[in-house]
Length: 241
Ligand SMILES: COc1cccc(Cn2ccc3ccc(-c4cc(N)[nH]n4)cc32)c1
Image (cartoon, rainbow, N blue to C red; front, side, top):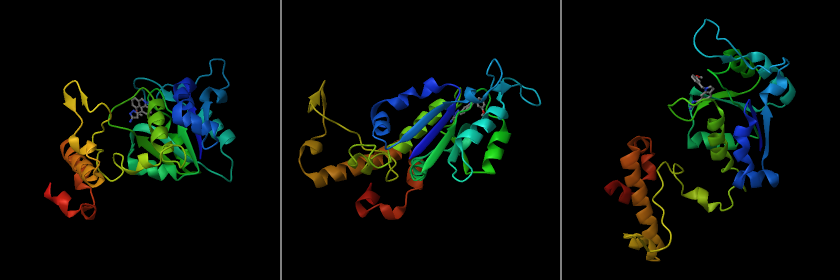
């Protein structure tokens, strides 16, 4: 998978040099490149913003650097899927993470200020698939933190990036439920015990306990997820809960 990120703060994306994503890049599983948008500016101040048309507070990212960036990075015959993060975007979910993990080439445009001139999105949409994405109903300073979150969620689904594939099987949101609580050693810590079933060695009982905990956690924290659950995925025991 190829990923390109365009930003005026390339140093914000340095965490992508670390840990499992960093290892996957070293191993050639991810072709991930971060580009400084100011590379496509020509004035002495390398300016990327201008006053908002129609007035108002703040500044807006001007279209010219973005257009020249696309001209250089995107050939005529092969197009990436362009993701533009925004508070007004489509909510990012685990389902979208799986959708994006199937793409051969993703490009992320990180906005700043009050956002990017809309014509950049409209121009790009004439040439490639563009999706505006939100990671939550709150407003960040810019797109970089959202892009880091999305890239983590997407790349951990790319085969080989996450060492132990089993980790993907029973994680939160994978079966539509939140994950059961996790424990490790010691069996007792400051008066808190590991639930005895987890030390029983009975894999059937452990699986049942984890399923029950996942359903209870989901019902408590995210009842909305239960509404969307395919009833067929609930077995008889589930329905008793
Ligand atoms: C566009 O509308 C805006 C209005 C006021 C401020 C800002 C700040 N800002 C600039 C670029 C940018 C990109 C993404 C986000 C963002 C995404 C999520 N989920 N929260 N915040 C915020 C961004 C934008």
